[in-house]
Image (cartoon, rainbow over all chains, first blue to last red):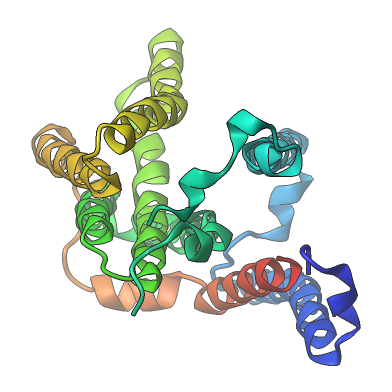
Amino acid sequence: MSGNPESLRDPSRLLLLVIALGTIPLFVVWMHVQAGRGKPALIPNSLWKNATFSAICMMVLLSWATLQSLEWFISLLSVFFPTPSSNPKVLTRS
Amino acid sequence: MSPPSILTTLPHLHDHRLTQGIAILPSGAAADILGNRTINLTGTAFLGLAILAAGLARSGAALIAFRAAQGVAVAMCFPTAVGILSSAFPSGKVRNIAFGCLGLGTPLGFAAGILVGGGFETGGVGWRAGFYVVAGVTMGLFGVNCWALPREEREGKGMWKRLRAEVDWMGVCLSSFSMALLSYSLA
């Protein structure tokens, strides 16, 4: 979808996205169910009440998100702003 | 099958991150049961074999698949390394230095890999040499791990039963399904 946002109007792609987003609350509910039954839970919901843990998780998430996306974007800058020296003739070598 | 080319493999550059994120939760749960040393050795051996296989890949799809397998192997190595370090050092300055060294590995390897990989490419050796060199280093480090990692006592019987009962497999399935589907539908 990130290459072509209008492709989201296609019902099969939209359904896939909806199912993907729907399994996230399902996961939270399952952790609640497992903790209630006393069975092992992968990420128990009580863990998020620890403020230190939640803060560090959020920091790691945001920092890695910016790092990875910027790395990708910067490596493609020579495609967005081509100059004679950045001519991508190297892309055609296999 | 077509040989690996940059145009076919470029969209799948970060597949190993996805598989690493998916595999990290069950491998951590398994390491609680089977022991940190076991899972770390398994992960290191698997990593060496996956890198070697990626170097030998004859098609773009095989290269992507073995890169994804590397992600699973790294997910087995990294949390167990953190666990082994925290049990080997008491809380304090030395442990902080040890964790710092652990975190040093990723960017140092990334920078060294870019430099040496570029050297291989312009020197005419080709990209496969980079994979072979790293596979050799990884298998050497696997030997070092076998020797250096401390053994831990654990009861040997009933491991498969405990693995089946004490790991939340439905949670593993739900989380991996949602992560994979989300990254597939958004990309």
